[in-house]
Image (cartoon, rainbow, N blue to C red; front, side, top):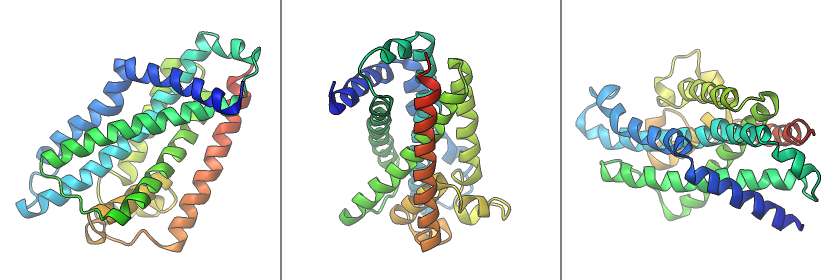
Length: 258
């Protein structure tokens, strides 16, 4: 099989699973939608009316980040563990399939599935009054930043899949990591975070990417600082590249054992 054929076959199979599994759709898309509708009435009910469009816009971005993390950190390792339980990798090991290209097909699934869910969240957010001021020239940068979040989250998901063998355990460990990242630096704007958490944000590519997208879409004043500085950008790119490569190697070595 050619490299492209291996990636395409893995992508098509994984995409069918993601679109048919109600648990994956519920945890990745429906839960962020629920939070998008409920959180303004629970956490931000005291916010003045004139600021609510910006708050809803920030929540749209936060929910998209939550959606990406849930897909890559929980559902991806869960699906890998399920395939391992079904002895898929023993079969693939006897075929001319390269673990790296098979894995890239799974990562492509995370990209496409996250993209579909993001469109749904954005459409709903705009319908309920979210304000997202995005210029045409900003779109490529926003897509690039979201891709960094996908790659970093996928790296974590691949590491979880390589270390945790059970499908249920892999999914639950992923959920725990998702919640940890969410409450560290995504649930609230940087300016509202406790001083103890702010340094952590600067070494977390997910939080950095989320803040950069928020600064472009909602405004730097709302976020509370300018995330587009040399140190933050360098840390985000380096850590993402390192973690994704490590995750790919762990997946190739641990999950493909006979």
